[in-house]
Length: 245
Image: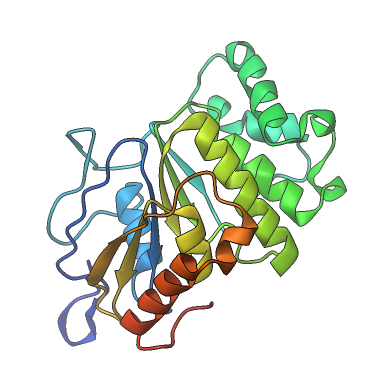
C-alpha cells in the first residue's frame, strides 16, 4: 500500500502475505506507524491496495462488505440513540428488516451483559460498557469476520483486562474469524491463536507465531513461563521496543 505519488509517496505496507482460517483469532502487533490500521482498512474494503489482492471466502474485497464487522478504538455510539438502537444501526444502514433483527440484538446485549441497559443512552454507560455495546453492534448482522482496531486501547488497565476476558468468552460463543490489532504484546498473546508481528514502515510481516496455550485462558495464565516466553519472543522481534507490555 502506497500513499501519494512521486517524491512524496509513502510506502505503508510491502509484501504482506497472510492466510487466516475461518474461526481463527489472529492478533497483529507492531510499532506505531507500521501500517496495522492501514492493513485493517484494506481488509475491510475501506481502501484498496496499490498492488495485490485480498480475498474473503474466495471473493475479492473491492469495497465495504456486509460480511465484515468492525470495532474501532472508540465505541462511536450515537448519543441520541439508545443502546439497543445503536446496536441495530448496521441493520438500518444495510436496509435489512429491523424487526427481524431486534431479537438477535437483545440476545447479543445479553451475551455482552448489557440486556438491562438496552433502553439506556451511551452517556449512562461506562467506557467498558460502551465498548461492549460496540462489539454487539459489530456482531448484529452475523458477519463471519470481525475486525478490531485497538478496541481497548483507551480503557484503564483493569477494565482492559476484564474486556480481554469478555472478548475471549464472546469469541468462544460466536466463533467468528477475528483480526485484532493492538499495541499490547501481552494482550495479543493472551487472546490470539496466532500473533502476527510487523516491522516498522513499510510494514512487513516479521514472523507469525502460533500460540500453544490452551483455551480458555485466565488472567493467571499471564504468570506462567510459557506466556512470559512468548511475550519475550515478540518483544525481541520488535527490538525490545515499539509496543506495550
